[in-house]
Length: 283
Image 1: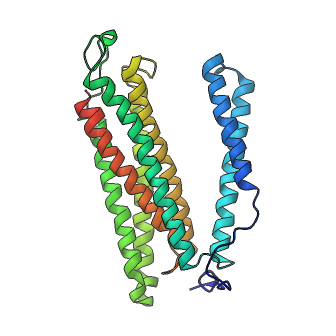
Image 2: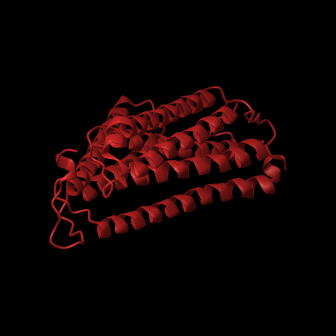
Image 3: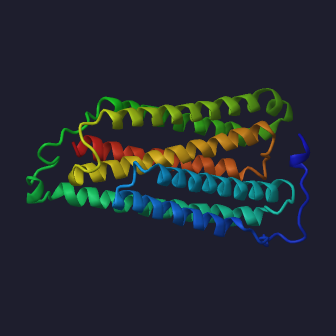
């Protein structure tokens, strides 16, 4: 295929991580982002140009650190051959634990939503949605976004199935499978971007804001964090599309594509719960 598939195997199957500045660098940038965000909200500094530039600069440093760390990981897999099957097994387990932590993360916000909606307080009129809140019609844009995400789940599964079966024939890989995978990933990325645009349009035309009581807080926290995960998943798949174009993946080394597909399916499942619980039942 090309030089990326002819990697050199290490003398032992385990991964001895080299010293790296990126974990501590990213930890400081995340701490700075959270601190600045709290300062913006507490001291009402959203309109301060200095703090806006400072926040943008820290965010750029965060993106730089994440990109550099991922580049080092890709180099370890492709150039140095350190990602053996045993290492990949550990990385898969680590990502599964990450998905479990994400499930717990969303579960906490769903708990808040049901705690407030099943037994609404007298302070919000003992009713759900609270008095004065006009909820979003679930059979409009939310239903369209549901169809978009479910369709993106089909296209990303198509890419995975073609990739798994592509190595039965080298000729098929060159002439058919590569193009199919490229189209499937491109469609998935496009659907993810379309979903994000519709979500932003919905926010702009919603009849309530995040500071409109418990309903606004839970609605925007749940849908906002999910939208952020869609954005991360779109970037994840875009990187996989780039790597696929340059022959970074092989039958034994396609972990990046595999976990990106897992992440996207997780995003799809969370949205189904959001649509049923928050948009349909909650309204």
